[in-house]
Image (cartoon, rainbow, N blue to C red; front, side, top):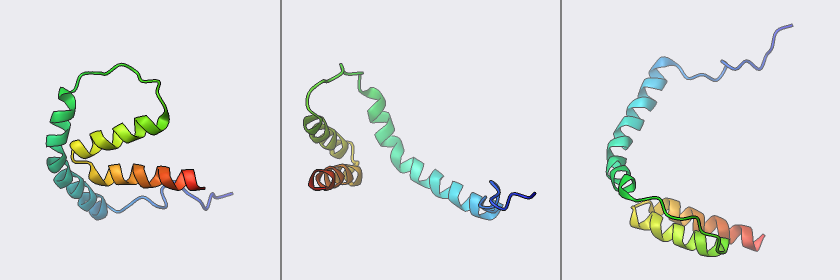
Length: 84
């Protein structure tokens, strides 16, 4: 019996893979600065304060590192979860 839901059914073609890889490479160069700055940060001790406080600080750090969309996502997702 043949499996109609093959793992290879949705594998992109070589040309599509190459275009995705080149897009990732071009985005990587813009994120290199963030990565270099991130590597400079020493490991901090574990925090055990409230999740709300940690998420607030995480958003501040994300914005400082230029990850504004990630920060906004965290803020909005958390607000959505609280209201639900």
